[in-house]
Amino acid sequence: MIKKWKKLTLVASLAVLWNVYPIQAVQAEQLKVSGNTLHEWNNGAKVDASVDNKGSIQIKTSTQGLKKGNYSAYVYELQNRDWSGYGALTFSIRNESDQKLPLNIVLTRSDKLSLTVSDNRNVIVVEKATGQAELVRPVSGLIELEPGFVGQIRIPFSSLMVKNKANTTGQVSLGKVIGWGITTTTPENAKLSFRIGNIKPLSRKQAVAENGLTTLQMTGDERVVKPVTGESTVQYGVQSALEETPDVKFQLDTPVQGVSITPDGLLTVHTDADAERATIRALVNGKWRLTTIVILDRSSAMNVQENDGTPRSIPDPSEGTKVLSPADPLMKTSVGWFIWLLLTAAGIHGLILYWLWKRQRKASGAIKRRSREDRQARRPFRM
Image (tube, rainbow, N blue to C red):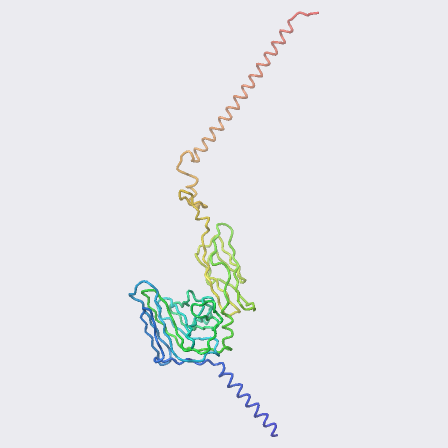
């Protein structure tokens, strides 16, 4: 009876541990940010940062009235933390600007090296309204969010590199971090306003899926020529540094006349395509989205010109009369018919004259023959 009671107690204890500790292990702890630990840096831009009672950070920058150029602003928190057990950082963000919000994240280690997201790796951008997760790569070191964007950004640590050292991409470890922050870069006469909050580092176990997505990228031509005749076709695909082959389905983001793509990524452009671009979307494993914009170029054959500047191309039907009715009167259709009739009549006339001449020649030869025969008939018989 005692043994049975001990067994029940042990099972109950294990059940409690199973229910409590796994939850604590996977729960991400929100970073507590205060105005005392928040700092600002800029190279000319005006920066205003504040923290509300919920720990959200309101950031406003302005380059109004500054000389032509690019200006950066950096809002960061100085706080010693051990991030060796983390695999990603997530935060909510709201773009209250009237323009795109260009930003990146910077993590500073205890050895004073700064880590940032590489242009060759993905971050995950989740729009709150749709819940769709987009894999996005920075362009020139900046992730762009559309005006009015509200959602979440997830930064897998496998997408980080040592600042200005692209060869360290995916090879850095965090360890002790003394600070983290958000950096923006804008040209002159620009104003930004955005809010970030719910800032949480994720454990490596929680961030396994995100870190497996950082190398995914779409393959295929960035520019496709619109055909003059027939059709243009290009094959698109998705590749990854991982050995596992993802399940991918392709589609156009919005319908485009004369352009289509099959679920396996074969893009076809027909002669009636009039748009200048088409957006291709790939759905990876039914959840993650990759997007690329394809530029649709006019055929270079349509741009070739003669030495005098005349286009050397297939004329539009409305221009057909210009080709068939040039300014030179000798090239008019009516003049051509007249010349053809004149030459035909001259040819027939020549044939008639030749026939009469030949007939007259035959008649003359017959008369001469008869005359010769008559003379021979009148001659006396000779022995």
